[in-house]
Image (tube, rainbow, N blue to C red; front, side, top):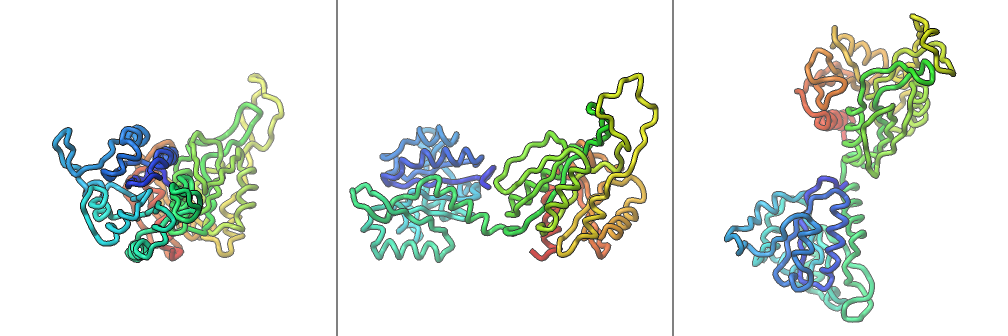
Amino acid sequence: MLNNKNILLGVTASIAAYKTANLVRLLKKKGANVKVIQTPKSLDFITPLTLSTLSENPVYSEMINEDYKTWNNHVDLGSWADIMLIAPASAKTLSKMSNGDCDNLLLASYLSANCPVYFAPAMDLDMYKHPSTKESISKLTANGNILIPAEVGELASGLIGEGRLAEPDSILNFIESDILNSLPLRGKKILVTAGPTYEAIDPVRYISNHSSGKMGYEIARKGADLGAEIYLVSGPSNQQISHRSINLIDVVSSEEMHEKVIKHFEQSDVVIMAAAVADFKPKDFSNKKIKKDNIKPNIELEKTKDILLELGKLKKNQFLVGFALENENEINNSLKKLKEKNLDLIILNSLNDKGAGFGTDTNKITIINRNKEKTNFDLKEKSEVAHDILNHIMTEINV
């Protein structure tokens, strides 16, 4: 969820600032890029050396870098951020933020930020309850900033009550949940297939193809990033994937893929069949390795189950997407497959396009819908192609 996100962390003068060391560490573990701005007074509570070491970036605290006589550009910092998080947010900083005051680098960067801004208050019980603090928080949330509520617990004064900075793991969980709830595919279940299948001749040999699975994996990854719950049924692949919303289901043969896809089909909202399932398998399987001298020059084949055709017959409310890899009569063959298999979209790959198809990091596609409307795309990285495919699907299903 936070992987490769640019997080601008603002640290203000509060005893709770010591928690930001762990907060930065957890953000980095999530794969985030972290930059830290400290207010000048916060330097009394935690050192820039600690936060710069953990964030692997310089820490900013003044408008002017006195060492190099250069300007710390608050506009660049605000523009860089995908998310701005102010934690701990002191009563003084909350008041200044709500009134548009701009007397330090953190406040200037806040006013320049074009991204979601989260703030996590930290102060003593009576300060947190004070009408002026409540007014500051109310003004900030009314302006679109997002409050991470303070927790109840023991405070620096010795009192027990509300005002304690939320724990770092709670802050991360809050942000991830908030992002997830706002994503366009939130609540959707998407079934994706990827990779080749292996059709065994004997325990050692098999029939397969050159599919790496990369296209299907990128679709799964992008779908999860957009909020969907993903069921990824993958044939043998060297691709790696890790995401809280992706359920990876490993299979080997077309028969196993058929079984797993049918199992998860009914509960799916969208089904994207990106796997290169073998069309044929050996009619007879040998339980023992066939000796070289006994291998027949001809292996009798039989057709595998046509999973996509079966899904088209079973389809109720699912949005069904298939792929077509063609090298002649490309559009006509794709339209034929679209109709015969009762698809909602078909993604055409041409073997005639350099850089498209199997074994590459790029792809070039044409998307055709049920109305025979064609959308052509340039050659792109497969991660970008996945984004194009999902954007097209969201348009078709009115998300």
